[in-house]
Length: 582
Image (cartoon, rainbow, N blue to C red; front, side, top):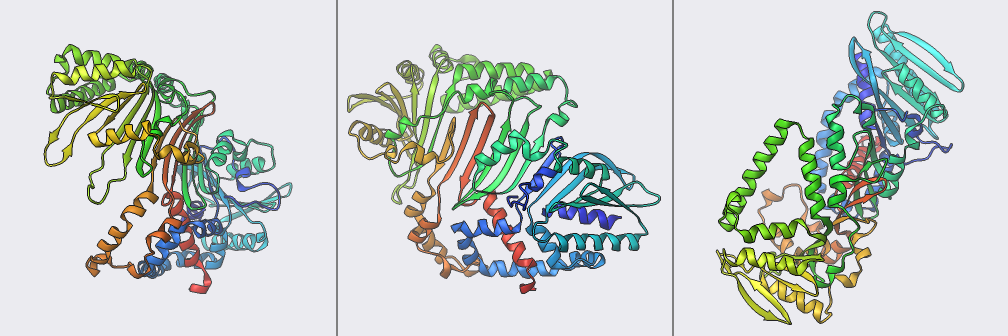
């Protein structure tokens, strides 16, 4: 019986984006009421996705020696799996066929197995075009288990489906396998299999019909390799009533579903977390994400900007929502947060400005009052540092209606505690502070055209003003929609990896070439491409948070992400299981 359970768990782990001959996928066989539902597109989809990733081919080429060593070690460990397969009379090619297929895994209510309560697990595998061979192999494996373990075998039929159930004559726990219409089901619970068949036949709501899944996969786009839907509604009834107050303050109810997905879209890996809600998120989520980013401050940013981030915020609403959240916390937790937060704020104020939280001058109280009433868009940018001056300096742009009042408050708070200086530049009044501690810094700020700008270096602030006033080339020339791609964010961060490669790749290659051979073990530097070829394979990294009427989306795009890792891993496993190489 232990061997049978091991087979079920292994298949669930190894377990879509293929389409059976009918218009149903394995997701149609997973009941919507399941606690957790997973979908895996299969090794074929992973291999296809890895082929489109330029960075995957680079890793495969450069790390070829290390990859060969990994394959050798895997073959050494494979003998343990082969022992199990041999007892079941399953061969390597059959296992590979199972994992190549799209599949879905559902986790539901507890069931007793070997007198131990454990979650019910069902694995739905698409058997399109290879149904006869796969079903025959599973039948043979179950028959071998029955004879080897003296188990009882029950054959049930329901319409077009057939279910085999293996059970121990003296212990609780049964293994069930069912097949119908290009679908193979494996589970440790016959009752859960029955629910899966009802979902497949349309008599029960299934995973494929969930709004959270539909929105998540549509937003993720491309080749969805792995996804999961967490059913918080199934466990919300077990949570304390006080959790409802915390959820209201956050703006997200605990009975919503959460979609998590990994995929590949062309050259980029994409990851998504979607919190599905029954109404637009309110509370703290709405205060921190009050609307979509417009990106007008890009006109102040250099074309060679390395890091660019923007977002909208309602500080007053954030304060109210944060206070509501604190009141919703249990008493002891609230006091602990207040103590730790107070200590941290006091420590930072004393270190940076030489004042204590309980002894704030009126100027600081006025500054905090102005900040607490601010609402609008903020932008953060870091130009690509040159090789001559590698220290990165940041630029902050605040598009607040009360920018002048806020600048006056900043000046009033800093003027008495620091040696703040002032100069006139291009019609703007620049305030700055010189710091000499081994690194050249000159924090500065000004107001231009109703916008508050601040920088860690006076030269960066001047460059931003010149760029805007003289309409020189800027990041805005690329167009905001181009930078955010498919993400329509309320908060956004872009790391321009292509810009970094163009600037630093020759230096990185030179340093790697001069490194000792023992530090480069497993890498083939001769296979490393030139900068131009790297640019063709590379994409920028983008992070976005969007609030909309259906919930919250947290999206990441990058050339090397979890989606890319899964694609390369799937390709490696497929190659490892291939009979040609074994």
